[in-house]
Image (cartoon, rainbow, N blue to C red; front, top):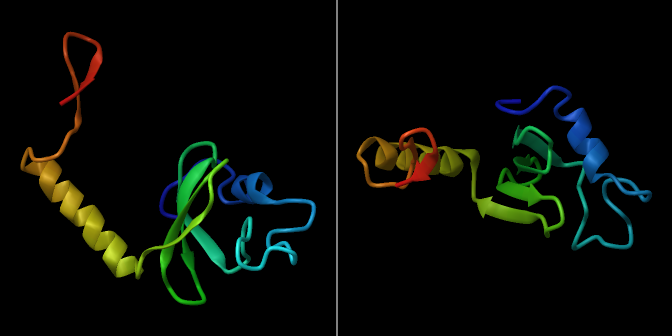
Length: 108
């Protein structure tokens, strides 16, 4: 786990399971959750996050109520490169970030 919440990933699995299990046999091409997907990043309630597929090492993401995205990044290295690129843009002022203006939060 690199980021998450108290009970991560157990609460994530509880949110993503179905009566048929994590990988329903009647939906092999569109699973709810596969046992091979290992979560490594999540928001505080487990509704959104990223996982690595141990079968092909690609990074995907989930969002409750949406279709799970597989292969969003071809590898963890590509994912971390994108994070580094975003952080570089933020540091250089070339990416919208949150700031406070007289109390309220505003996006620039």
